[in-house]
Image (cartoon, rainbow, N blue to C red; front, side, top):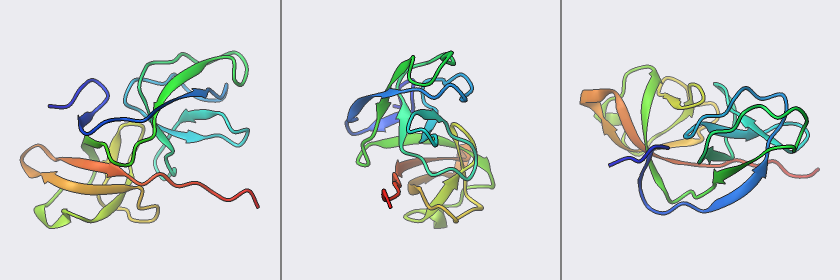
Length: 138
């Protein structure tokens, strides 16, 4: 059974992350990305995720003024709704992109940051793991 941030099974590695002031309010379970200044903010479709929000966070008045618990485990399995497209059993083991802050896009494969572990065809959801992507310093 999934908990309130979508964790279905496995354990989560938790870090405290400073929040970017350009984000919209973050809700538990949202995908997170690093903003250009190195602070986290809510992800949007096409972003490369770096973690999952484990608590709600209002928009800070300046960068880093607020912190949030962020899950960074690539072993944890989450239950996610399909935001774009329709899940099929044939998608098991394939990768896709995010559709928004909490949903996946099974029609896109540009970023491949989501691994479909088990399609839940009857509810158009999937059990997924995350492939967090980070860039080099140069």
